[in-house]
Image (cartoon, rainbow, N blue to C red; front, side, top):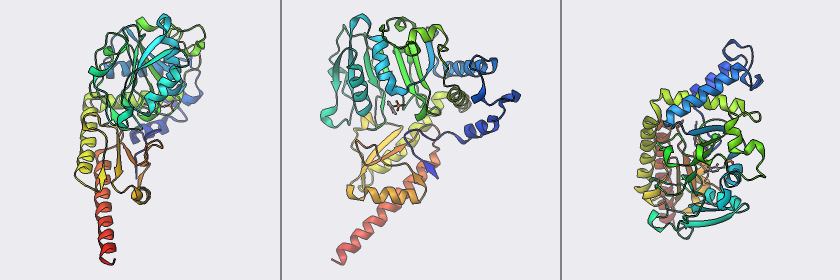
Length: 366
Ligand SMILES: *Cc1c(COP(=O)(O)O)cnc(C)c1O
């Protein structure tokens, strides 16, 4: 069975087995990680190791804080605005699909939000070229969504901006190299690619910590959390523990550079097959195709449901496209092996051949 879910998504088997091993008794402590006080030495060790491994993985400069918070990316659409708008009260957003639209609509409740560039008119099938962005030099920050999970669109070049760049990296964090020093803040829900739901990672530069609106709840005040080591309230301890297993698994795989190569290879194989088989088509511009969420259609869209149901019978599950877009979505996060892609491509080939034959037969018999 291959699980192509966009999130919550599959985790490497090694991690699930490790969690199973530790479930009732973590390292001879006699406790499950779920049962430990978050102030205990045991949990502190788990949390510190996760912080340090993540720092190492992404080569994080010392002047950034890593916060393990809750709420999910959707909550942080609002919280980013509440924490960063400050005196300027205005921010720029780049609209590239479903999630960046959600982000800017939430932010609008708290300030003056300017859509500096949008690809809505082309059906969100590309990233607006940087030369066309109409940035406001007075904006507190510029927000992008590095990978549009529902649209299959991804930034392949991160521009250098004169104002702090903020990014929702929920669906491609740790799947490719990212120079965090180009950003003022990045945030990600864990359940796409890092661990179980419940954990939201926020990485923030020191200079942005202390401009939160008075009304921000204390537990979501990035500055307050940073000065209390993320322990203002109970952190999502079990999710942090699994994320920590993921960070050390990634280090064992050779780090992000090695993982990125593998991910590119997987995506390339699938896009190449789609582009060379007229039964399928991908409408995303090649310059902006996501390496982690491959979205495509059957040329004869009326076959989509049958395709999905046949795929599922063969063990290829969770391939249905996001509701706003329909079609097929293949999520290829870090835990998906190349064998899964090869098997899916083989299925797609067989399926298209059998359908063309049925069609030939139908036309032969009138
Ligand atoms: C899934 C997703 C979200 C929403 O995450 P929640 O945890 O449901 O809040 C936001 N942004 C992107 C890019 C996503 O893929």
